[in-house]
Amino acid sequence: MLRRHGRLIIGGGLFLGALIYFAWLAFQGSTVYYLTVDEIREQGSAAYGVQNRVSGRLVAESFEREPQGTLASFALADEGGQYTLPTQYDGIVPDLFFNEHSEIIAEGSYGPDGVFHADQVIVKCPSKYASLPETETQPDYSVAGGETS
Image (cartoon, rainbow, N blue to C red; front, top):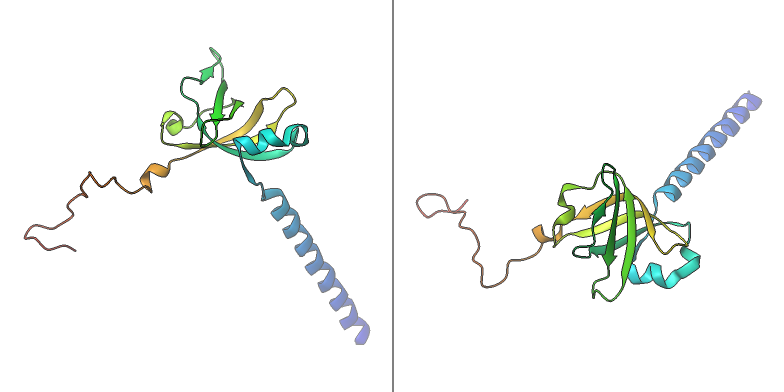
């Protein structure tokens, strides 16, 4: 009887250990840090080939797409616009890509050629979270009769 329970406890421990190990692997693979344009440029050769996410704004007039293809080239700039990062992406660019108020997050790796090779492009649109300037008025959501819900 004790041998049977011992085997069950050992088997359960191995199963639980395997679950924890696979959960740890999944978590490690999904954690990618966001870097700014100047941070990835400062890393230099240490960043080559390492999977990263880079956050920046699209440099106006820098977007180019190969004719008859999906390879796009553009530049990302840091907040101050002091540093730019040449970026390439092979795929369909999201619809909001050309919005001047959107922030672009490119996931991929920085190459020795000085170009960030993106595997995925995500466009964040912070404008819907920004408050209106004080000169603009808030929309009137009142119901007929002057009462608000």
